[in-house]
Amino acid sequence: MAQRTFSIIKPDAVRNGATGAILAEIDKAGFQIVAIKKQSISKQQAEGFYYVHRERPFFDALTTFMSSGPLVLMVLGKENAIADLRKLMGATNPANAEEGTIRKKFAASIQENAIHGSDGEETAAFEIGYWFAGYELI
Ligand code: ATP
Ligand code: MG
Image (cartoon, rainbow, N blue to C red; front, side, top):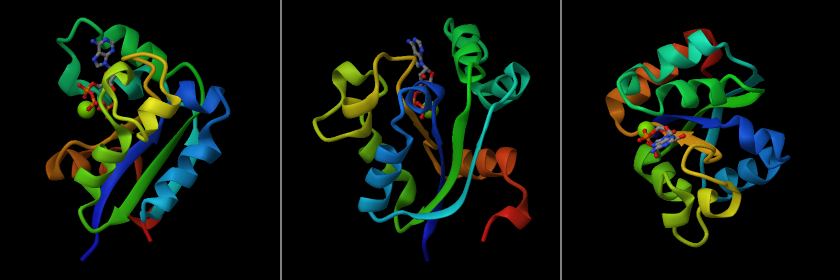
């Protein structure tokens, strides 16, 4: 059975016009797009999403960045989707990201790093439910 993960094309990548190219990478890697929507989010919505990072020094800057412009919210399906997406994304800091990864190609800094991907099964379930209603998942 295909596994589901949650992903965001972050505001930096949308602003840079990289949305289509990133979707192409995701498609080429064999992911199904289960659900997708482009929208802006509020600072409060970003804070709820990144609640686990609330004590980190970068929390305010991160949530300001995430609410700074439109982004693309996605649910992706594939066998081993969670781990495979993390591999395709590359390291959090693009300076450490491997050649061929999305962050190596499209990210500018450790904060403005183009893409988000769930880091485990529980996180994926929380994140999918945070942004998508059941009827949106087909
Ligand atoms: P994501 O959760 O977005 O997929 P990740 O799992 O690679 O990324 P996390 O440690 O969960 O990284 O951090 C969440 C996000 O917070 C990062 O993607 C990045 O945008 C931002 N971030 C992480 N570390 C820093 C930092 N040291 N300075 C600024 N921003 C940071
Ligand atoms: Mg993370």
